[in-house]
Length: 105
Image (cartoon, rainbow, N blue to C red; front, side, top):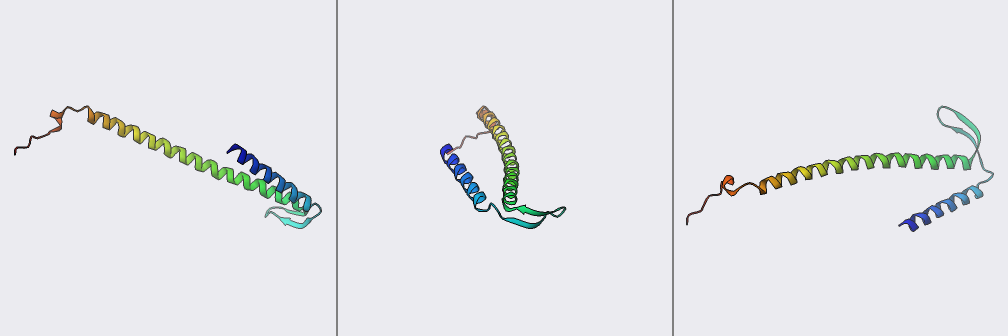
């Protein structure tokens, strides 16, 4: 699995380097971010920022899902422990207390 992830990282770096080399002299006239307007911005910078912001956004989503799942796992483990204790208590009850009735045939 580690070799596969390293291979995918190598492919990603090679694709990013190829994109940068192919778009070396391309500039965007104006770029509006809503609160500020940039002029003559390199396409490479725009794509790099978009890529890294996408990675950060995916990381935020991943971390929140991971926390939510870990909390659910902890809750389920607590429930399992509670049910196991209840089962252990039921196993130790003497048969006279359970109320088993003899059947007469």
